[in-house]
Length: 68
Image 1 (spheres, helix red, strand yellow):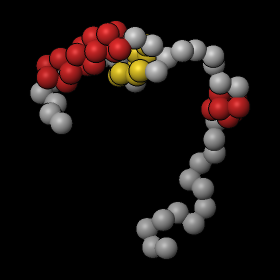
Image 2: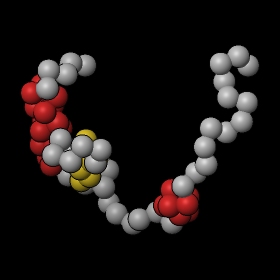
Image 3: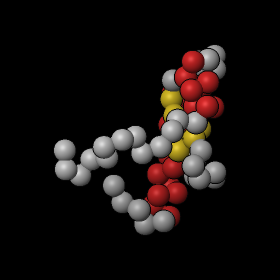
Image 4: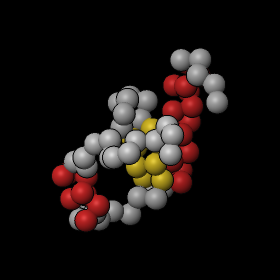
């Protein structure tokens, strides 16, 4: 197919494979981007805490004039 690589573009990191095969045990069901640590996320099992995390992230987006 035109536009697609004919071979894999890169290998998979060993740590990623280990993480999939041996997942961490936790009760998190919510995730939001962490505006204080770009590239990281905030995880929680609480919908109330998730709402706060989402509000923090939306405020950060607004402060950077980033619109959906």
